[in-house]
Image (cartoon, rainbow, N blue to C red; front, side, top):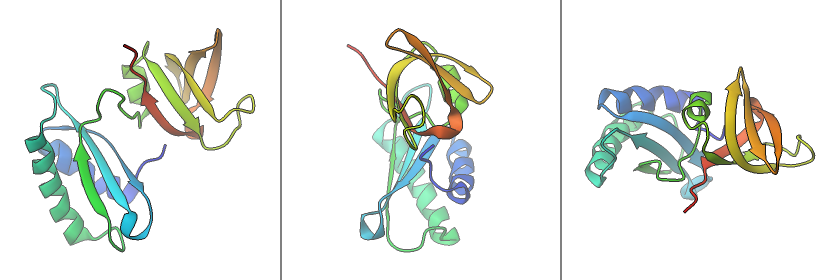
Length: 152
């Protein structure tokens, strides 16, 4: 998955869960001054701006002390939204029956890199989706990015 490095996740997750929120995941994108650390949080009651502010303040303090990222970056904390990113196998299991858009690290399955389909199941380390009348088995390790697709 396109997650932030493990060291950053290890610092952030306990801070988020300690405040009573679900840590959905985090991404570190960009380079130099354009770098952004995106942290996704959730709760049963939903997420408001005040929740994001509280978590952002906590994470900022930890990041300032631990300094795991060299150079400048911007910290953004938000809810995962309706088209929430999926970072863990548990997320795929939780949203079984939902539509998902996947991007692989490289075009390794049927010469394709991108897939959109319904999540059928998770078996071991493999995500099974239904796309264009066929079941496709995708090893979790090949998935670069995944997010739910909302249909209205």
